[in-house]
Image (cartoon, rainbow, N blue to C red; front, side, top):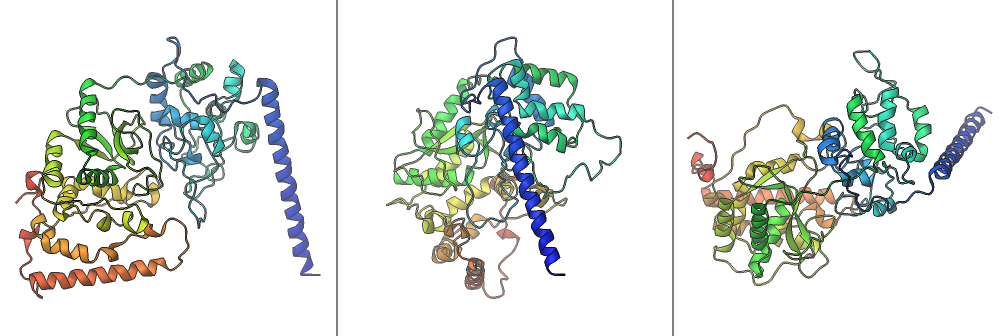
Amino acid sequence: MHQRRPLAAKATQLLVRVALIGLLAGCASLAGDALQSRFGPAQPSHFDEASIAPADVPNYSIHIKPILDRRCAVCHGCYDAPCQLKLTSWAGIARGLTTSSVYGELRLSEAPLTRLGLDAERASQWRERGFSPVLNEYRATPDAEMAGSVLWRSLALKQAQRLPEEAVLPANRYDFSIDRRNTCPKVTDYSAYEEQQPHGGMPYGLPPLSEAELQLIQRWLLAGAPDVAPPPLPVDLIRQVAVWEAFLNGESHKAQLVGRYLYEHLFLGTLGFEGDPQRHGFKLVRSTTPPGQPVQPIATRRPFDDPGVPRPFYRLVWDRETRLAKTHMPYTLSASRLARWKAWFVDAAYEVPQLPSYAPEVSANPFKAFAALPLNSRYRFLLDDSGFFVNTFIKGPVCRGQTALDVINDRFWVFFVDPATGANDDAAQLVAREAELLRMPAVDGSNSNNWLAWRDVARSEDAVLTAKTQHMARVFGPDRQRIGLNFVWRGDGHNQMQR
C-alpha cells in the first residue's frame, strides 16, 4: 500500500502534465488559426529580400538601429543571445528567434550551426532551421503589423506592466540567473505568454522605451520594417580591399599557404584600415569566388575544415553589425604591416613544394599544416599584434560573460621571448620533432566518441614539457644561467616597454 500510493500519485501527475501539454498545444493551434483567419496565411519568404523605405518612413539606420543599439544589443548582440535573437542588424531581426540554445543542455554530439550571415541567407531558410519570426509575416495590414510582431508585442507588454518601485526587483517575478530557461514565444503563443509572464516585456528587467522611441518603431513596423540600402564604400577603401585581397590570393603554393595561415588566425577579428575616419570594419572569410566577383562564403564548422572546393579564396566583407565590447577584436591593416608580412612570408627564402591537406590530423594541427612556413616568420606575425591574439583567447562571438576570463578584475603582465632565441633554428627543429604531440583535441571532431581523450591530451602535454625542458638544458646548460632579461622581446621598436 505504502509503495503504490507514490507510484499512483506520480502516474496522476504525469497524466495531468500530458493533458496540460495537449491543452497548451491546442490553445497555440487555436491562436495560430485565429491570426491566420484574421490576416491570412503567414509567408515565410516575406523578409527574404529587404524592402527599401520611402522617404516619410523612419530610416532603419538613422532612427531604429540606434534605439536597438542603446536598449537591446547588450543582451541581443552575441551568437548565444537569448533565443538566439540578434538585434544588431536588420538580417538578425528578419531571422527571428528559436528555442534551441547554443549552451544550456548536455550535448554529446555536435549541434546544428546557426551563424547569422553564414549558415543561411534568407528568412525562409531560417524558418526551415526552426527559427520563428519576430516581425509580421501575415498579410500587410496595420493590425497585422502590430498583432503579428513579437518585437512590438514584447515592447508593448513592458509598457503595460511597468517595473515595480522596489530598489531590488523581486526574485519571484524576475529571473536573472545564468542558467534561467528562455521562453522564446512564437507570435501564435504570445497571448498565452502575456498572461503567464506579465513581467516578461522587453527590455527585460529594465525601464521601458520612451514614448518617442516607441512611436518611431511603431511607424517603422507599420511600413513593413524596411531596411536601407548600404551606402557605397569610399573609393580609397575599395582600392585597399583590392590590394589586400590580391596579397591574400596569390597563385603560388607559397602564397596560398600564407593566405590560409593568415585567414585561420584572423577570421574572428574586425579588420580595419589605418587612416579610415569612419572606421569601417571587415571580416576575413573563405569564398568560392575570387576577388572581383561577389563573395560566396564557405560555411564550415571550423576555419580549418575542408572547404569542399579545390581552392578557397580569402575575401574581405564589410561587417555592418553593431560592435560590442565583448565581441569586438580590432585588427589594423596598414601599409607598414603589409610590408612586414611580405618580408616575413614572401621575401623569406623557403619553398612550399605542395600544399598541406585538409585531413583533420593535418588541418587541426597548425604545427603540421604550416610546417613549411618559417617558424621565425610565424612567431613574428603573432608578436606583431600580441594584444589581439591574447584577446581572442578571452573574447569571441559567444557572450557567456559570467564564465569568461574577461570579467576578472585584475591586471596581469605578459612577456615574450625574443624571436632570435625563441624562434631560431634550434626551436624550429624542436617544434618539427614534436609536432604530433602538439595535436589539438579538435582532431577528433565535436562528438564525444572518446570519453578518455583528455588523458591522451594530458600525456601529450607532459611529453611536450619534458622535451622542452631537455632542449633548454641542452642549449642553455643544465643550470640555465645563460637565460636572463636579454631573452625578453623588446618589441622591435613598436611596444611601450621602458628599458
